[in-house]
Image (cartoon, rainbow, N blue to C red; front, side):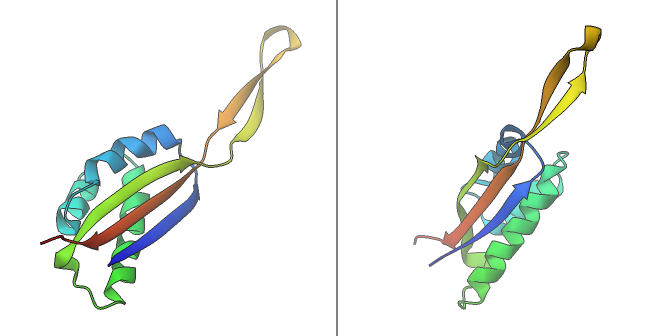
Length: 111
């Protein structure tokens, strides 16, 4: 049994999100929560909310939290906000403000 949760349009670059997501992939849910709680990255709070949502979706189907592992987790590119910053001699430089879509899938342990 699998359950998933999405966090869409998160205002952080996908590369930064993947650094934290890679830490929890394949871990048991209590261990993944512990990793996220003690991570120094700000994105870990958003990923923890997404993990809690996926666990809650699985518990609605009657699966206990202790029996769940993080099957897959990934951060895809979202739309990029394009902004302009003035530069020397009247020119301009483009600033890319990236977003990402975070997906966490939890499932039961294979015996």
